[in-house]
Image (cartoon, rainbow, N blue to C red; front, side, top):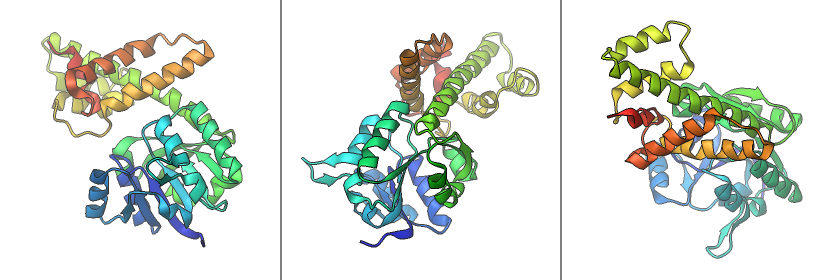
Amino acid sequence: MTVSADHITFLGIGAIGLPMALRLQQAGFHVTGVDPFPGPRDRATEAGLPNEERPLSAESAATVIVMVADGGQLAQALEGDEESGVPGLLTLMSPEAVLIIMSTVGPEAIRAASLRAAEHGINVLDVPVTGGIAGVVAGTLRMLASGPREVLQSRQRVLESLGTIIDCGERIGDGQSFKAVNQLLCSVHIVAAAEALSLAGRLGLDESTVLEAMTAGAANSWMLGDRGPRMLEGIDAQVASAVGIFVKDTALVAEVAASLDIDLALLPVAAQKFADAADLGHLRRDDSQVMRTYDR
């Protein structure tokens, strides 16, 4: 089958995947969304994005993007499922195509995926993202890209349609390593912001006034300024990044740290707060709602 240079198969059109796929469509690419679940496909149809249950469009796509939840889903997407008759991307894709993995799955999962893809003659780019749904909508998503320089350059127009490329080097897996450092900082900063604003409330201070004062001085952080207003907005704050993402990603960072025998003292504290928020029923709520773990 002939491969179309502007055809992108986008596997995983969930909360962040769908707006990413739509942004690529708006940039002029022919995008086909893929998701095994009817809910995301229905939302894609409503938004005007062609979609399918199985990734058959990958046969003619020059670029295949994967945005799934974890390493297990990535492996299944690549290998398929014989029992249910779902073909894997590695058997469908042309060697001319490039596989871009944008999920946060850790360095080892990406390296394993790259080795399997190489057996089929398929080039891989490791490009986890940071910036959330808001970053997608604003076009400010930051893509932590690693992989062969010439392959990255060949897909520069695709990636720049989504935001800014951060070149993390040619070694596959280093994009994931950058993302692990990013998620360590983000998780700790979000919990620190929640703890500080909760302290302000217990002191009888107006939390909004405290937030304004702190973001104007040395105590500011990007997460305090971004998540702080949603923390004060309360439980029904619009979901830009869910608690569940940090439950998963703090566990992933912990695995990376354990493999390196490094004691990350702050990570377990942050991880526990996100786990506590999930136990309170806030798994799918905005990650700012980790603040609810400090409620009386």
